[in-house]
Length: 247
View 1 (cartoon, rainbow, N blue to C red):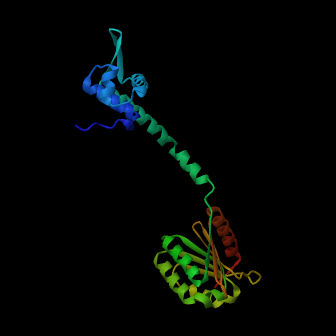
View 2: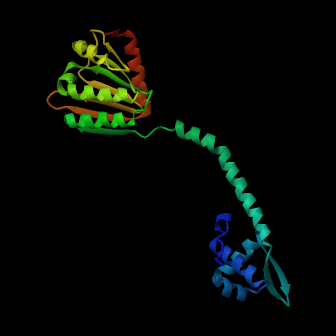
């Protein structure tokens, strides 16, 4: 019969070997235990002492020689119950540990993607992450964004709408016509920023991501992954949304 592994109950490998050996051979002396359990002379006394404290072996004296015997295996149930109590204590602390984890400062990641291909890499990644009912925010969309990737963005928005993802877009004044076109796509709301507010960069915000995208001769996409930063940008977006005009 294969020997059971008692280590999950908190016994060391040596303790497990010695206890199981004593179960097989019965009352025995040090020498026989070492031979049967195959543990070193230097460790046997410490192992036997720990097993005795755990209530798994008894010690008697016969003709001035110490004899050791294993207690009934039912004693192992005490160790099982003790482990269960320890596990239950840990389970009780899980809500607090989860709260601590959520309150911890999130890891910040930054990435620079170059060219129109880099911009597509980011927006395609976001499309894969967004889920039905979520909102994708676009702020300060300039007309040159449409000139550079108009056909791509149109298809991206169509795919986004099919997934059931909402989109709120704030266009610069120079992109009014584009705003009218895009607002015809399902689950899409578009507004134009006040005339005194314009940005040459497009800012995408969703989940814990914020991307600042510039077009022109050297398109660039700077991505930051940080929940708190993303929340700050969302709040700023909503403030501008209230003061902007719907197309």
